[in-house]
Image 1 (spheres, one colour):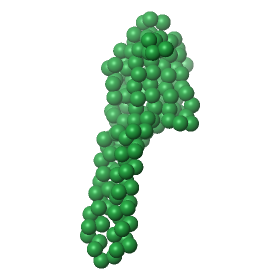
Image 2 (cartoon, rainbow, N blue to C red):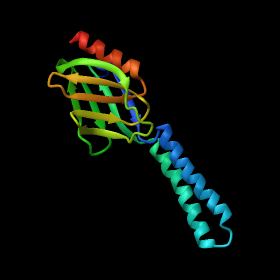
Image 3 (cartoon, rainbow, N blue to C red):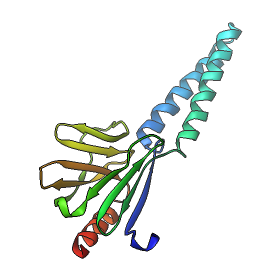
Length: 161
């Protein structure tokens, strides 16, 4: 089974630098207010608990796999977190493969199998993506940290099939 895998990548939920920065700024705000709020002990405790919780949740999220991309000889398989459905993209139906940026925005929310405006998006973090267009005109946007390796894996699989 492992021999026919051309490319495997795991995308983790909490490893996008922009969202890590947002969570750390919120935690820093809570700790600053905790330090400055000397007079009112219950609210001081609350800010400490919230700041600590943000850091703990952020660390846990860094180890949660959002989705896994596997390129084999005949298809691309995207398996998501827990209850999400398995998505298989047949490589014989793909007519165009492009390396592009995922989005022009700085902040992008993690998504798995989001259907919107004739595009299906898969994204956990980073700025790179591989855009696949099938015979029906449907566009799959697969966000990745290893854009060149994913692109080369798809092209190699298409060449062999």
